[in-house]
Length: 265
Image 1: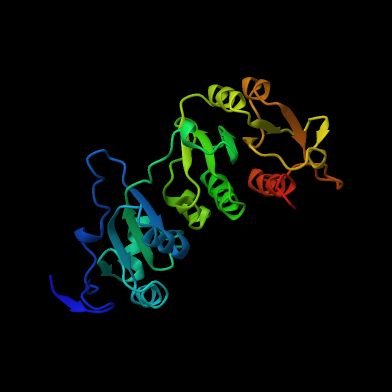
Image 2: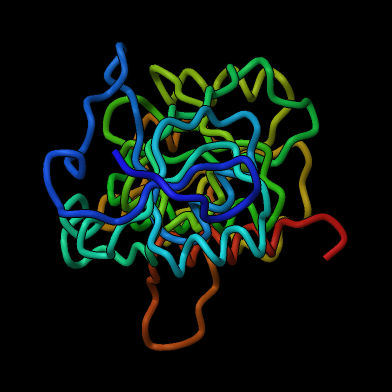
């Protein structure tokens, strides 16, 4: 394949060409666990994270120019493509901003590895990748140490979720557990205050005050927290809405709750 010098010294960037087999998604690695990231923030943050193993980067000329201006030397040789090549991989509705990256998923810590004074989130069967991604982004903004979730009934950290997280996946680890209730029991034994968000709770969120260590437990929209999850919370709290609408998106609820429980607010 013909190459040309384009970008940081010492790098070879492939020139755009006819769209064919080389623009099909490549097979995943031996474990079948390669993830896809697209869009400026997810890709730029992944490129800057030495802990993220990279496999393949597609970039349009404009996106490549922006990368070299804002990041400089890249850890992977990009393939220069037209936007339509990335559209073919992701579909026409994906807002990819000229960037597509295949990478290994980030390793997640064990529950025991989390700091004893941490602020955590726990997700009880929240399956919408847009919501989970937005929660990850908010968690990164508030310095959350980890997000506890289950392998089942939760979306993978790729594609839409990663785009919605806007780079937050590189800063907030996902802690995958087999059983959420058992994880909450373990955290309670370590001294974590377990705060379940429940619109029908008697306790107003703003009466709890800052807590450390603490885990904020969020349930799926509509279903809320499951019964066993509720039983393993120390307190159930509600956001004291004053208007006619008394429910909001779970990612917005996460942001309000993190602010309300922040130390030194």
